[in-house]
Image (cartoon, rainbow, N blue to C red; front, side, top):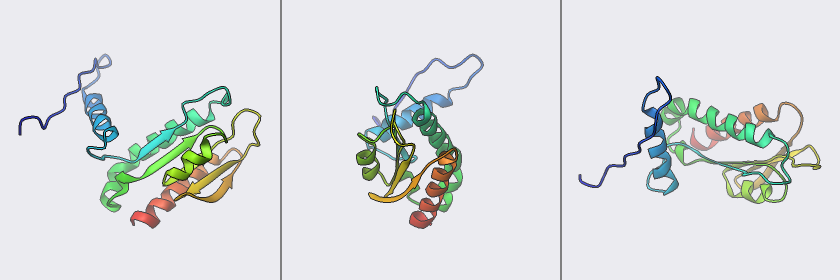
Length: 150
C-alpha cells in the first residue's frame, strides 16, 4: 500500500546497473531493525591502537563471504539472516563487542600479543594466531551456522 516503499537513488558506476540501490535500501531497513536480510557484521572503526589493516581486510572478507553464501544459506538455514558477527581490531573494545555478537573475534592491535580470541554466544571459544586466522574464523563461522541453524 501507500507508504510501503523505500527508494534510494545513487549515481551508478559507468556502465553499472542499479542493484547497489537495492543493497543500500536493504541496509537502511536492516539498520533500523525494520527487516533483516543478511547477517550483520559489526567492525571496528579503527583508532590509534589499530595501525594494521588486518581488521579492515578481515571485516571486508567476512562481509563478502557472507554475501556470497547467503543465497545457499537462506535456503538451508532458516533464521541465518539474524546472525551477528563482530570483527574488532584490538583488546580494548574488541572482547566486549565480540561477546555481544553471536560470533566475534578480537584481532591484535598495535604492540599487542599477536593472538585473536574468538567468542561464540558470549563465551570464549578459542584463540587464533598466525597467517590462517581469516580462514580459521570462516571455518568457525560455517560450523556455527550449521550447528545453530541447521
